[in-house]
Length: 356
Image (cartoon, rainbow, N blue to C red; front, side, top):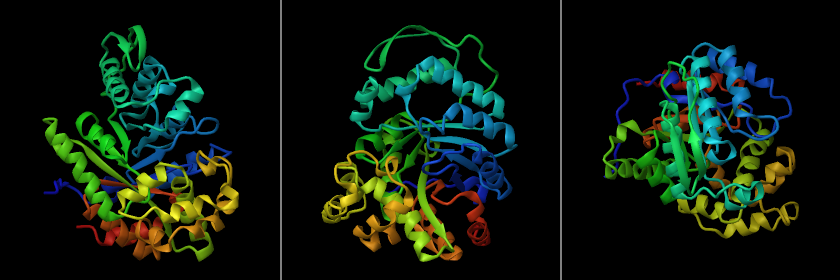
């Protein structure tokens, strides 16, 4: 039986957040205006998908903390393996202190090829379990000695610990093992974009059941559903925003199948997508190579129903109603993706009108 948790509030601040600097960027200074706009609109959290080069987590966290007053800041996502545990713990606690306790840290598994390229251990389940334990211990001020799958650390400890609570630690998940891991070991789960509300319901329930099996209170594991949103935009811009984003996920071999399978979709369209001349030989994420404009026409290879049923598109009222579908499916909070905060005002107004 599905496990749904009751929330005390249905306000925008409690239920909706948004990505800042979505996709590829060249000027990270834009994050300041976007975060301030999000706070002005009453959104609860701004999220960053860290990319090396122009979207460093520590720098952006400091910028958001000092240019806003109340809105939370979340990493969605970073990775354990790209920083020494003591460096990551230092970043986490400094960001918590400088923001007044507004930080959330989300982590992901990524793919083995990425870790081979940078000389880091692959994110196996045991690496993730051990890494989250090491980080929590360091943030509590403990000395950590560790030699295992996550690395060899003879003696780690934070020299100065600010008087703030450690940030919540979240796990980005899509497959059954990652969902179970999130429920058993993390403070929340970040679900992948382009899941239908029905898929979100199944995955949220899997996470909460895993929490129960681990002897945890499922209400303490917060479920974040990521919803690509394009409201009140011309068709061409909607396709560019939603379709191009979808291409970057579904074209990755193996990952596209996992995402389609989570929605109960057949895999045939994935081969049609990957056979497009522009994607020939591309094995990683296409948005590392191409712009949204370049990928717009490629997205025609994906069934239109996939994009309609697993995103929020159309009028602002229709988008607000779709957000409600995801919340009713069991998400505690939404992470809106694709549209920057200044595009969301009318949809947020419609959502507020339907608040219960």
